[in-house]
Length: 72
Image 1 (tube, rainbow, N blue to C red):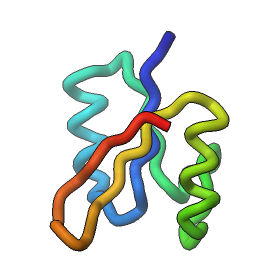
Image 2 (cartoon, helix red, strand yellow):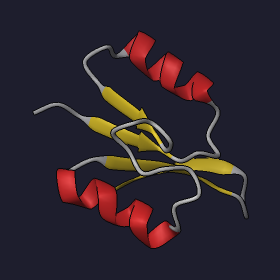
Image 3 (cartoon, helix red, strand yellow):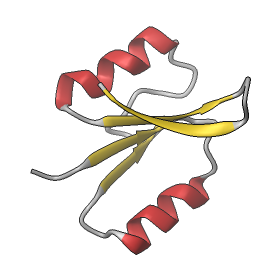
């Protein structure tokens, strides 16, 4: 089973580049990619997307300014 991540639109694309460089076996999508929710999608839609296909969601928790990954 491949590990798949969905990166929030507020996370810099550098994270995707580094994830794919360090672990090329990962599938890393970002909000706005053709096979991911579009930019501006509300949180309930974003949270529903990964849970439907078994992805992890990585988002920026703005209150504390750090990235968080959660299995949905």
